[in-house]
Image (cartoon, rainbow, N blue to C red):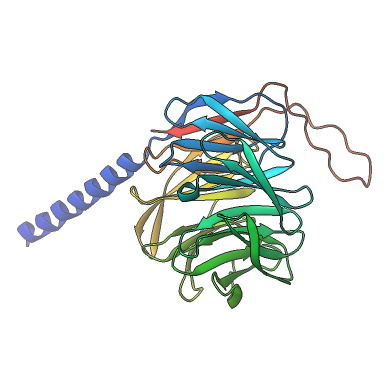
Length: 344
């Protein structure tokens, strides 16, 4: 009995030590650097091209291009009210979504020179390339539609119309399906990427106002950041909400580090980066919460190094608001815009 009890204690200690080692290996992240970016305007998405070794940072009137290895600015792509970037290396082109009122700027990946522009729906926000259909897709919030672009010709080849709510982030599974958050409806759409038809609508409760989205394409799990302070993991095959866990407010980016099994959510209201370990398709453990900066809501992760990049700025006191008027934004301190680097 005593030996059996000692054996059980020994096994428990080994399991505890193994769990502690896993958390230690995955933890310890903090802001390890900052890349100053000129200009005192707002921002939206960042996109890390880990193969091409470039970081694309939206900065209102331009996309700032940064070398991921040297952390130096190597050029800019002009635009108007820019949001996101998609790159298609096989045709040597990049694509920028702009709300002007709604177009995509096309640029050369080598020279960063603008080579074209195509009209899409109003207020295109998310933009991404799907290698399975060889199309670039924009999520057009103003027009409540999805537009498909042939990257070779730069022409719109089709669209999904009349989606009936505020569209937000989207991902392609690269196997023929697109998944789209309908933020105002609390739902997720599954769209046939080739036929451009909605094939399923899933309620994401208890997730409210689904915003950010990323995907584990191997295990068929979608990671959704919800504006009511939750993260949700969704089964890509049937829309089942696998699990939810609390995170901060103001989430606007999700990223998945496939090699390290890490899921990130950035929340701007509390200036934090929430780091979860994927223990299994059904189980996710909060490893740590990294302090970033107030307003740092968008993010990209370099899949090669595991470093996360977040846009940030410093702000002065919020101006007083007149009775009945909407709250005024705090002014950005001139010269404070930068990209934070989070690593171990």
